[in-house]
Image (cartoon, rainbow, N blue to C red; front, side, top):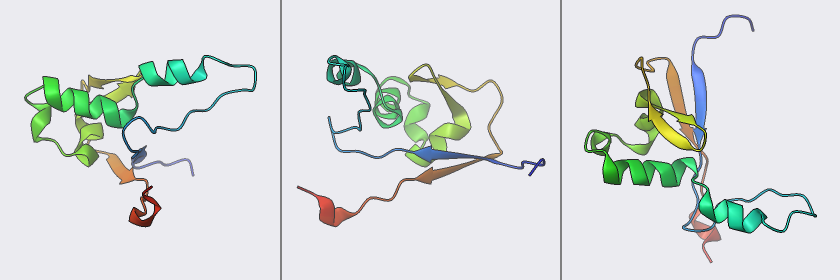
Length: 96
């Protein structure tokens, strides 16, 4: 597969304050770091709150206009016309 045509970006979905946290057994501060770090979903909410131009974008359209770098969304220099956004599947029956 040496000829790539489109980049596929998977967009995470999670409930408030229930984003996944990965850590090793000896890491005690993992939850504190996770609470302070943005996910792509929370960063898109913040972006929609602060950027009037981003307000017009749906969550699946954000990767065509913004790039995820260093745990934040930054505006793309060139329009990402070769990007396909995919949402993780969410089952409504798993609500607790």
